[in-house]
Amino acid sequence: MAVVTQVSARSTVLLVEDDPDLRGAMAEALRDEGHEVVLALDGEEGLRLLTALETPCLVLIDLETPLVRGSVLVERLRADARFNRTRVVGLTGDPQPVPPGVAALLRKPVRLETLLTMVRRHCPGQDAATGSGS
Image 1 (cartoon, rainbow, N blue to C red):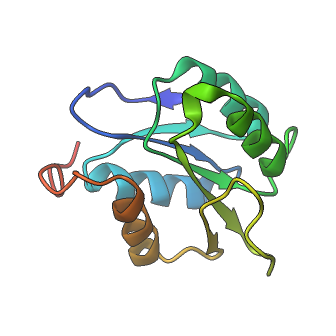
Image 2: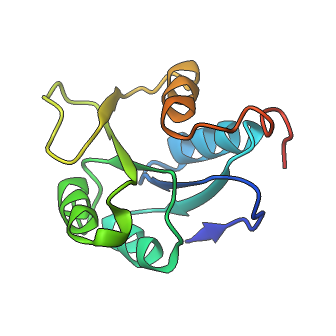
């Protein structure tokens, strides 16, 4: 279930999360902030979508996704020169250090205020789009 919204003036966030409630809430909050959001249910779908995207400003990855684990997705992303500048934030419920190739971790359950602060940090220049909705 890949969902892609097309609005070229917005920054793109790829969200890889298998929990439908969390994925929906995060996507809605990001869209409300003016971001284009591409959704993937698992790491395998995330890989397919990533190769089809122009460089997203941020990839949010559940590190425990089924099929292809988030850590494998991060390794593949980092091996592709097109995504050298793409920031990755891991989502996890487990206490763990920040894995290689990941800029930061958001602990589950994710607080939407914390998510939005993190995205603003990694997708600068979105102030004009904030609050524009979809």
